[in-house]
Image 1 (spheres, rainbow, N blue to C red):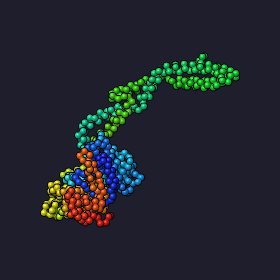
Image 2 (tube, rainbow, N blue to C red):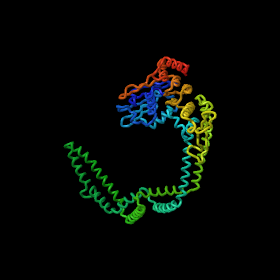
Image 3 (cartoon, rainbow, N blue to C red):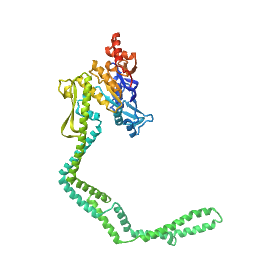
Image 4 (spheres, rainbow, N blue to C red):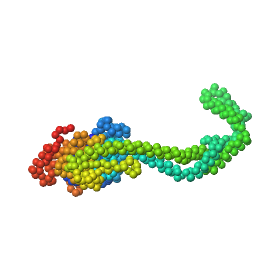
Length: 558
């Protein structure tokens, strides 16, 4: 549930902190005072798009924050855990800043978050019903979504859509394969020829480098042997070899070290050098003995190199890239073989169609049950909203061909009184009737939802008198199970609330600001009187307001 909404430098609000309790809360105030601005700020915290014009005039940055209380076993808690955003105190803190350059930053429980994450989490925290929600209710996709959400099988709808896309993809693949059969045959012939040539050549990934190195060594074998022999002579075998000369020097220095111990340190430095020279000589001898001047082997290697080079040039790749070309050729041939398998492609398309059909059938069955339950419950609420004898019917009309959302179209049909025939909601209902029907649908669908906080922004527009009192009663009943926040201009609705806040606008044209004042007791009655009579409040108006408040306020808190 929403516990705190904090706003800084947003539209006409300079600084505002609104603390909310459970049950039913209303926000009232004169037109233009800024009631809906609070809900706009909340919507931004829930992922709505920010516009620079929403920044308070003269401010560099707006800052919005909201604190929610989350049940540890709720979907909200599961979402936070999945995204590693759980707070130690079990609360949910949303924060967002907006600057004059149009840049926006967001945080969830103190950690940076994306607007998409705010929106995803926000859908599980708050269900926001805007003042024009009834207009979107006439759209077919909105009606379908309402039935699916009411029945609790939105996930099944998404799975059905995924299956429909998979089925269409399989069908398209089968068609594309048939159309490309001739071209594929020509390509396959070329690829098979290349595959045979590369496979016959049989070059491995490292062979080119190894052959190149071996060819260079054999081509220069004589020079390498000569250099190794000369090196061996210079180190140990020659008359003036380094090892012999160094040995003589070491012997002389060792003899003289008896007269000066410092020479002994030099001898210790020279001994490893003598050992290194002798080791180098032995290594050169071994290297020389292994060198082989074999013209036949050199010719074989050069012939192999020439064959590899010719094939590489033919296919315009580097010699060392031939193994990769063979792998690419094999893969393409496999893909062509798969695409050319008309039987397999047809079978996959049929399997995909069958999978979609099973999900769509299950979706249809569940929609039929949910639609019947929803229309019955909405019809019941309509009777309480001065639409006696009116009814809602949810028709499931078969589609001429399957769609991503199933095999039927959903249409809300309504009759506002007994003698009126059922007709499409958008064509039959007047503006006031549509608003009342929308409220009935919102109340009914909200009862079965899991979102803990419901926000209604002037959904009672166009309603008055006894109907307004019924709206207040419905919202009060709904608040027994959920937290309800409502922006209203009707005293009959406000009188039912457990908590009442008035939004005030201060200042003139040059500097306008809004504040929120909590009302209790006499303050609530005074605000109800203002809502009843405007600025000309009389004793009679106050008496009427007091009677309204006493009659409709909740007798016992839940």
